Length: 368
Image 1: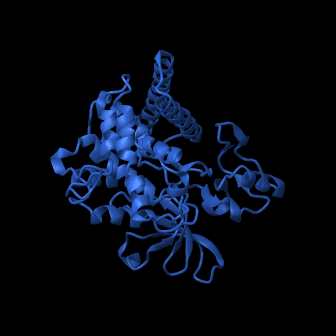
Image 2 (image 1 turned 90 degrees about the vertical axis):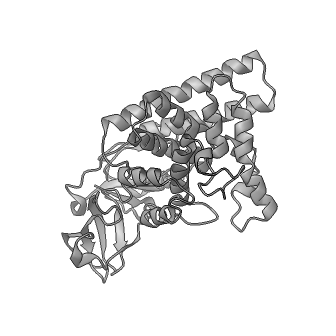
Image 3 (image 1 turned 135 degrees about the horizontal axis):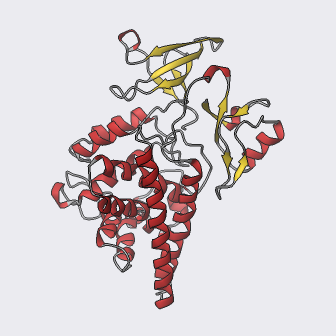
């Protein structure tokens, strides 16, 4: 099984996994043979990538850290919950509003329990990068991804369940303030002016000011919103906090937040290849990010998950067939096309082996 872009699909391809719509309902079942009309339908539903079955990827197993249906349910819960809290704040809500906010918090807590249950039942390298992609509002999908990354990182820290749940809740709500930022600025394709960037940065304080007044939430959740852009050396915002002044939850959250942000496509820039994103994080090791959190994060995520189609620097194309924990950016690859883009009898190479150290992954279009 492997992940490909819907734009590259041809009629006759068989689905490797069921396709869901934005509401978590099955659009097409696993094993369905795609026709031109079905492919066109996927595009109309803004499905960007799908898993397929073919001979070239036979035997490559895909391990889902989070089932696709649960991830989509989480997107819907976050979308509804964030909007509920934001609208109640805007209207200076009364007792009825407090009831609604409490109901939203309980929905968050339930989906967090489901996510944590899935993570603990599947103790493998966290694989979110190769999730089937649906074109959605990136504030909400980013919040889901950061929640999952931060939850796994909290688990790797060996924290008690209560603390893990608080970090997950903080991650879900960390970008609440962005709902008050102009969409034109959030989605501006060009360079931001200083005034526009100042408005973007205000989302941390805005989120904190709202969340600290929600009595059903611990204050640490509000601090996740406030501090997730702070940096160890004091060059972050909004308060320029340093090292031990930054809450541990925020140190965990900042790693998850930046990794998901730079590996996701935005209108103002393309997605970064995951090993390049990891290099970016490590460039800030001990200055922007906590050293311990970076190491734990690197050890728990699959930056090139099995089933991902990649292009190598020598022109060959292959499918990631095995993850290398000792060398996260250099997995084993099943080569399916040669340097001239001609199909070949599939064979395996290990990018971490001495014979292949000069070869790099240069493209993974289903991620970008």
